[in-house]
Structure formats: structure tokens, C-alpha cells
Length: 281
Length: 271
Image (cartoon, each protein chain N blue to C red):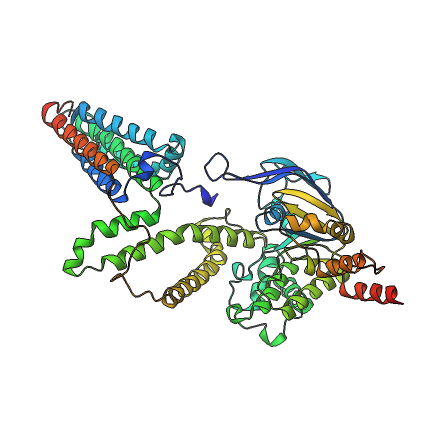
């Protein structure tokens, strides 16, 4: 499922004193099976951008083509688009409402018009794939911990079997262990289910380890778009816009300036360690 | 969609009206409403219209923005004028069918009521558009502080009001987010009959209530943590003080009111 964004502009509250230009001439192509990280400072337009991908926001100008079809066409079925492009919002509290976790996960597939049996099967599969503890399936969602709530929220979208999964800051408010678990889970799903995953975050550290492609947003425009190594070359520019490259990048640059022949492109701790060992030999 | 509600929203601008003391604006609005409901004759209407237009011009709030607020009362205005038109008995009956009748008094009543309602909304929303909720409750608290003597908890009421007003935009934004989150899961808030629509609201209302209660709880805790214990002995960061402009504004208001009364006595026609 390929998504093409052509000169997307978006403006909040146009023609009033509160007018904000949130997106400026965004051009992007998202291909099948990619694992993309969208990074940006608060207010850089990353959340606004992803809400365009499943038609929750309509661009002030520009076009979006999904599988070659313009989604702003009169006869385009938005609900069908939302069946294929799943979106998990930042706060799971915004979507959990049912009496039990299991029922809540059923909400999405039920809206797709599937029969009860398929719905339950899908919900069960989804909860399994996010490794949600089985004894909590029939408990109310309001008593769960932050990490577990997030799992239910992700399962609720996964149960709809989307081809593209968008996650808005899935690690916000989680402790380091919970953060790693959720990110590992997402990486696994990308690998096993073969779906396109778009991960929105403001933490380079989180994203560098997992994604194949990073899109850096700044003040409503795409600042960099490329593989993590390329993007981190610009670590000084990133710093200027309030972002930071992974700590490893800094370490490697520091070592290089001290005369050690290390690989500047290392983005994870493992890669860095390997490169340092090699340089010391 | 849901953000389009402009009635009662603050519109930031740098104007003489924005700078007035909220007490002046409250009093002026009160006087304006009284004037609106006791004027008689075309002269009074002209005075009020000129005054209202002048105030809007002075406030630098775009007229289109004010008119947008009127959209929400269109139905109310239609109903009242229709009822006035069809059910008022009068000396000259122009048309009659069963209980319905159109009379000369009915027509004047309908026209007057429509004008009054529209002017009422325009005038009061001018106040809320130019006054932040905080200023407004500050002004109310100070203006009504004499009620403290008869043990009315003025401060508590003002505090409740300001909290309620403060949370309206937050809850609207939250509603918007929840709606989107559920729409992303295929929820449908637009189609279906009335019962289905009401049922479809459940996924929206439950998270909203849960979060509203949690917010209330957090806020109460945060206030207590900062030793909030009611109004007695509490000082203000920006105490309200009258300036020369406020005096002039009072003067203008009294002049305006006097003119409307004079017009009512000397030129009470037509009607």
C-alpha cells in the first residue's frame, strides 16, 4: 500500500487570530513494508502530518494518493481507508471505553462489519500478538498500568488488520523497561506481519535502533529524509532545532576528534562497541 | 468541526474595549440589556444600533467573527418570531386560521423580538469576546463582593465559574481527540437514526467523562498542594483598579442610557 503526499499544506483555524500554518508543502512517498520514524520537536507538525494519512484531517491544499487513488475524490471511501491505515493515538485513555479489555479490542473489527466469530478471533489474535497477559482479558481497561493500556490500544487497532500502522508517541509516559518492551513489540510486528509501520517520536534514541528511514520535521516542513546514518550526519543542525542525535553519535565524533579511527555511522550501542574494539586492535 | 463554536470565546486584540476594567464591561452589558428591553420607537432603536456598531468597531473584533456566533441561535430566533407572529391577538387581524392569527401587534412584536434577540447576543458576546474568562470572574467577584455580608460564598462561586470556563476549551479539544481516536477505529458519528446516533456516542462519552473526573481530581490535589483554602486573605496578582478610561466609559454608558430613556419618552413611535 503506497502513499504519496503531493504538496500538502495544512492550516489550523484559517482566517482568525488563532491561525497557524502547521504543514508547508509536504512531499513524501511511503512504500510498502517500510519502517519509518517521524521525528520532530513539539509543534513541528508531526502529529498533524500523520492525521492526514488516514483522512482525519483534510489538507488545506495538495493531494494524497493511496494506491494511486486521490483520497480527496468525492466518491473515495474514507472508512475503507481507515480500515487499511490504522492509527494508535498518543493517549490510550482517549480510546478505551468498553467494560472489558477484550470487548474494547473488538470495537474496531465490529465497525468493519465482520461477524461475531471473526471479530472475537481477531481480537484474540491481536491481544496475543501484543503479549497482553491472558488473565486480564476480561478485566476493565481503566485499572491497567500505562504500558498495559497502551498494549490494549495497539491491539485495538491491530485487530482491524491494517496494512499501515501509525503510532503517535507510543512510548510517552512509560518507564525505560516499558518503553523497550513496546518498541521491541512494534519492531516484531513489522517483521512478522510485514506491515508498513510509521513511528512518531521526539526521541532519536528510541527510533535510531529500529527504523530504516527517518523523516525529521521542523516548523511544518520536512527537514531531512533518509536512512538514520545519513540523518545523524547532520547532528549539529539537529541540535539547533532542539533535537539530538543518539548519544552514540556524539561519542563517536568525540573519539574521532581525539584521533581514534572509529566508524562515525554507528547508530546503536552494539555497532559503536564493535567499531571501537576494531579501532583499538 | 467542533472548534467552530465562537459564542463566548475570547478574541485577542489590542483595543480600547479590551483594555477596559471588566467591572465596567459587566455593568455596561447590564445597562445595555436594560436599554434593549425598554426602548420604544425608532429613535431608541437607532441610538442602540449606532452604539452597538460603534462598540464593535472600537473592539477591533471582525464583524464576520461576531456573526458566526449568531448561527447557533438562528433556530431560537426563528421560533420566537414565528410564535409571536402567529399567536399574538391584536386590534387589526390580517389573517386567521383556527388558533393562528396574524395581527398588527403580532408583526411588530415579532420584528422587535428578533431585533432584541440578535442585539442581545451581539452585545453580550462582544463582552465575552473582549474579556478573558479570568478577568470576567475577577470582575464578577469584585462587583458582587457586597454579597459576602449576607454570607453568600462569592469567592467560591467565582472560582467555580473560572474553573468551569477554563476547562471548556480543554474539554472541547479532548472531545476532538477522542473522536479522532474512535474514528480511526471505524466509529461513525454522523450516520444512522437518532437512537443509533445516541448509541454511537458511548465510545466518545465514556473516555470524556473518565478524563474529566480525573482532571477534576488532579486539579483539586494541585490546588490543595499549593495551600488553597478559599478566598479569605488571598491577594491578587493583578488587582483591579479603575483608570481614567474606565471613568469615561461609565460616563458614555450613562449618557447612552439617558438618551434611550429620553427617546422613549419623547419619540415613542412607531410603537
